[in-house]
Length: 467
Image (cartoon, rainbow, N blue to C red; front, side, top):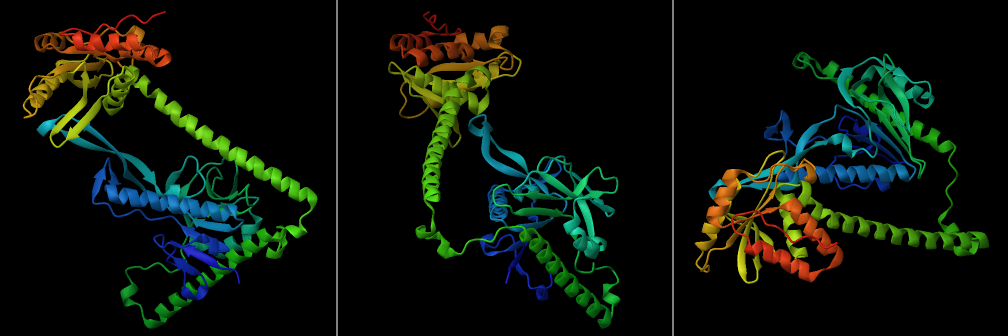
């Protein structure tokens, strides 16, 4: 007998013959023949951000994993030729932690900001809905090509309502619309891979709604409500089975297991099967190579951060550029201490501070920060001399490098001169490291290192790039 799994739908009577599960259950939809699915409910949040609930780091991880798991399960079920019914309720949107952290300042002034992003429970669906709009409504029209849904809708129209609506798009067959027929509240996607069907339906209430008069009700009313709930649930399961059977009428009969034996395979089938295996192997190899090239391209593009980036992205670009020059640099964040870049050139210890500005020159704040870092570093017991300070600046980062007019403020220049710090314009540094990366010119790389370590109180002039 066919098995109907209901996931996240707690309003179905046990007598309906439906196997009910919560979203937290580790159940496989491979065992189901038909699936009825309700959108996951977001975890309870104790804090808010920009008017929306904001989940903790642990809650965010678990919630994103939950949405990913059900998206994968539902997609697998549809691609396996199964019918999946989804009851659409109002989207629940929350802020989740991305795992990225933005740090600023050092010492006691250090701050740690967690980066968050919006997440919707709609992402549990294996399809994308365009231009979603929230809003409650009860007047629903049946679309012309929804004949297979007519018996279901005749039975449950009075128990249905919509909380969201969306626009038409490729691959979507509208089933139910708003009264003006401009927005969709029920639709169907058909799998191109396995011929399964994903049917999106408005909200449905099988159990009578509780109200303030419940306390005064008698036993007869309670029994009548329970009988209605039981019959609604039985009819609901029955109609889902009927719709699924209608879809399967035109489907070819699946071959029995014994047909997998190679003795029943024709010569043409055998040849094509081997050709297919070779093509799939080549495709897998090509796909792997494509992913490797994408990763290499992304990694190679890190140096471009010298031209436009700020914050951690610019710090990573500077460390990568120093490596191209033959310098091993690291960023350090330990306790109250934070250094953007620490490295050594010709035996001389160097501390680097990195700063990018959208449309302004690099100001004195970062020189002051660099002063504190050098003093803090010198105060260490194992340090016997002051490190050389270097401020890597990316001023007017949103402006094309050839059109930038501002570099470092006068106060910044004066303070750098007093401390003997070097000032590096990262877009000038990019020109040098691009040449080194392309040619492997070790002599030129050594000259660039010498320019950084020898400069005191002014902007570093990298040697001209050879023609």
